[in-house]
Image (cartoon, rainbow, N blue to C red; front, side, top):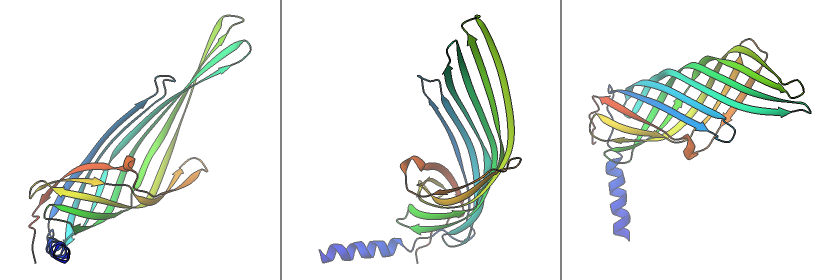
Length: 226
């Protein structure tokens, strides 16, 4: 048993000396698309996000950089209202395009020659707009008439936050790696420009639904063993 503990300690000590050199540069990116649809209600939600990022190692295993990109969310929901002599079907369509930039600091800890654990502190800033369209169709059973009405509104918004994200980075070879970010701890403030309406949001947890994956290309990695 003592020999096993000693072997594990020696292994961990040796692996902890591998590092990514100062001056290394990496280029990464995430592209996400999701679609959820309820066949019973015809409600749906579509999300698309593209987020490239660049980081520079200013010290061994310590990088600074920024992510930037575009996201778009579209939600459709339907409601039906029944009166004594009429039925009203209402469709709510909400679109939310936005741009985001997020400077960050990322610290790596070596688990093996190819596997690293990292913690990332980022400050995301997002600006965009919420476009809402309401389509109503009313059927009057007494007269047999059908009335249609459409209303729309648009509001600009901005948000700023602070997030801490843990993750794993696995190097397939010297230059290419696959990374996974698992959950986040954070805070953000969201405010509409033309409305007296703001919201504060806190996030915490390692929920698997918050896992995101990305591919990274590293230039001048040069692992060292000290």
